[in-house]
Image 1 (cartoon, rainbow, N blue to C red):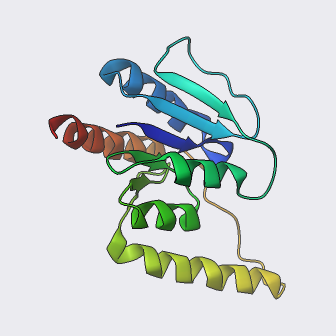
Image 2 (tube, rainbow, N blue to C red; image 1 turned 30 degrees about the vertical axis):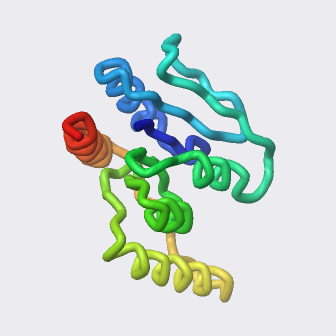
Length: 150
C-alpha cells in the first residue's frame, strides 16, 4: 500500500498532512510532479520528477498505483482512471471519489470546460482554508484506518 500524490496542484497544507500521516503510519508517500518538491528527510516520502508535458504526471500515477493504494488528486479524469483500476482516490478537500459518482463529476467537468471555451466566466476554485484542510485530514485518517486493518 502507498499514497500517490498528483503534487503539481496539491495544496501545501494537504502535503503537510500527508507527511505527518506517513511519518506516523510508515505509509509510503510518492509526490509526482514535473518539478522537484521539498520533502521531509524520511525514506517513506519521495518526490518523483517526471518530464514536463500534458498529463505526464497523471500517466505516471495511473500506471504506478495499484489496488489498495490511494491517489490524492483534484484531477477528475485521473480519479476516474485509477478508480476503474481498483485504486482509491481522494481530493485535497476531503472528498473521496467513488464509482457511483465519478461519471457525474466527469460530465460536470466537461460541461464547465465547454462553458469556459464558449467565453463564459465560470469562476475559479474556492480558496483552501481550515475547513478544507480538516476535511482532508479526516478523510485521510479514515482511509488509513481502513487500510491498516486489511
